[in-house]
Image (tube, rainbow, N blue to C red):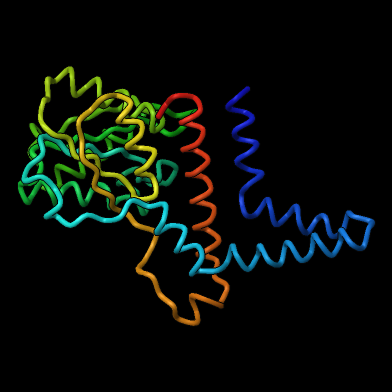
Length: 255
């Protein structure tokens, strides 16, 4: 019941839902006062949700800031990468179809090739309810091989279905393989708070390295300040989804 209620709440607070409610109110309310309130509220929120500067400021606040290589330890035993970076629903199936989150994998490979991490662990199973035979970590194994990563330096965890399970099963595998050295958690900047909180719950010693940023450096140009942009609308949805997920994870003890 808690999960159902959390999903309902999530959809109700999404920008598209809020605007729909406001503009429906304009047509459904009989009172002229409430009609105007609904209309004006919808227009103000439309400006906020499509404003590039405001959405970017919120992302700069939420995303973990990027770290220079000098801020990292000289060497890590393993780079832990939570998956969720491929399109599992796209054909043909003779390749890996990447989403924007592929920066997680590429940055891990880069650090490996620099000698900053000894091994790469991929954590992620299937994100499909009906077809759970294809595991994302298994798909990405071939990509690491193409990037000249030694097979002995690749660790796969292919059971996890969400961020909590990513952390839980990865921690179990690290202990099973008796990996004692420092772990570097690599995740998208917008998702790092939840990923790190889940891994902390598993009592793993790790540093974080955020990648795949949606925010950009602050800009005060007229187009950022005044011109509506659908990209800002998408960023709001992403941010609200992640904050809701983080709060739910905290409430149920996952993080």
